Length: 303
Ligand SMILES: CC(C)(COP(=O)(O)OP(=O)(O)OC[C@H]1O[C@@H](n2cnc3c(N)ncnc32)[C@H](O)[C@@H]1OP(=O)(O)O)[C@@H](O)C(=O)NCCC(=O)NCCS
Image 1 (cartoon, rainbow, N blue to C red):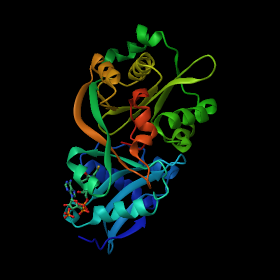
Image 2: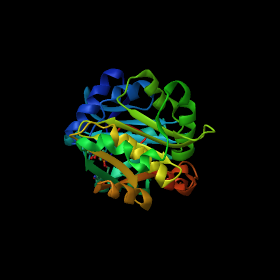
Image 3: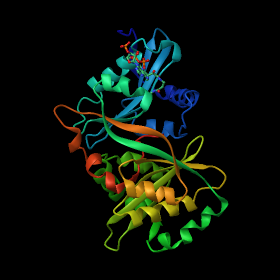
Image 4: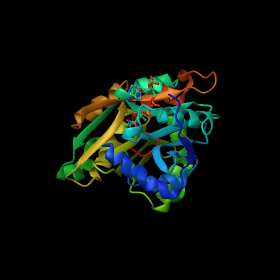
């Protein structure tokens, strides 16, 4: 059904409602949404019928040519009337039309048919894994797996460009603005690095507070041992009493085994979908090639 919705760019006063709508949907929202909007304001879209906001999404085309869509939401009474399709078509035809690496998004199983109708294909299946925190997690950084590898806090003054390059080589997303937020002290992220003596980054990890848990991700590492050291260092820095969650690709068996070893269990699956750009195939995408070095995903966005 064709929608009568008019699509416009979001402005900063629209942004708080992304968090509210997401919480109403039962999503585990980041409180950093306004910060992300300030970093990449282009591509956040509002669907309106008359004065009433009936749908919204955010999108980004990172400078490396990789697009991402998230927070696709239509108000309940307007679902099934073409608003979601209008929003997706608009963003794919306009803001994301030149993303040479295609456009990714994460979807729950029940929404796959909606996105597949729009031309998205399943690229990877991901497991969401979770674990309660414990008071003695602070001691995890003393474990041999962590001590053997020199995990250090990220230094925003010197490491940012190197991190952005490592991120781009692993995930396909060159997003210096995302990492620069550490420098500006405007997010609740903690980030750690493993760097060899020559200065090459061997591993990278971060965690941040969401509404209902601490989310670990990304963890990118050149080996499972490095990923484990990064994980333990991150867990040692999380306050006790809550839950830690993360997403990891189901085909990275080393990652899944490592998380199970440290008490994580699998909760419902999510799927990484991709809308290929032009005549590109999904197999050419860096995240397909490097999934064995991706131990925890950040959904390139905020949830
Ligand atoms: C998913 C969502 C954005 C779709 O928006 P929408 O405006 O309802 O979608 P449309 O009306 O454009 O739907 C287009 C078609 O897809 C179908 N469709 C929509 N959601 C579907 C779903 N979850 N499963 C199967 N089909 C679906 C519609 O029935 C319609 O089919 P038709 O053309 O044969 O009638 C909306 O249902 C929503 O906000 N859901 C809750 C939030 C959410 O889960 N967002 C997705 C995050 S990944």
